Image (cartoon, rainbow over all chains, first blue to last red; front, top):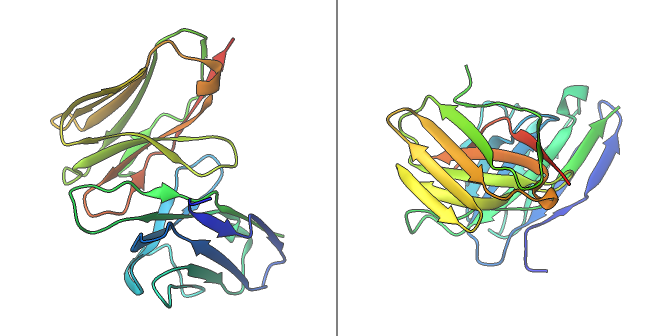
Amino acid sequence: DTGVSQDPRHKITKRGQNVTFRCDPISEHNRLYWYRQTLGQGPEFLTYFQNEAQLEKSRLLSDRFSAERPKGSFSTLEIQRTEQGDSAMYLCASRVGPKGPYNEQFFGPGTRLTVL
Amino acid sequence: QKEVEQDPGPLSVPEGAIVSLNCTYSNSAFQYFMWYRQYSRKGPELLMYTYSSGNKEDGRFTAQVDKSSKYISLFIRDSQPSDSATYLCAMSNTGKLIFGQGTTLQVKP
């Protein structure tokens, strides 16, 4: 499968625990995005990387959230001291960029987080 | 007020009907307009994108953008039960996508 992959697909954790999600983008896609989607809402932008550089972070990304893309390939999103409000689907997307007027963002299947 | 507004529905139509989905937006800087389809517990997949104003057709799907009114539409002709999904409009000017809430569509056989 050459699409965007995310691991794990589901994560159940207790409030206060730390969790880490992984995203493997499509090979040669140098831009990688993280979004969060709560039930009944559209995805909301969290952050994005151009290669290994994190170029933008949303105000939604509190101090408890950290994202990395150390070698410009896969990325991890860590949430520390999880809260019930963190329960959501975390989506990763990748695209070729920035060359060209438009390049499609391809989404992974998401990681569904439930905080008890 | 959200940057992108979309009626969440749900919208229920009989098979074969023409479906109209719409979004309004407030940020005049948006230049790229997309429609994504999302099945339950899956990631969104791109249906169509349009640059600036105009129409674009792809099979049974037509996307329209009216930048003067800050209004975009997606039309689905001859709707099929397999079209049942959540449809998300999305917009961009810098690369990151700003999504609407999504409209849940059910096409009944």
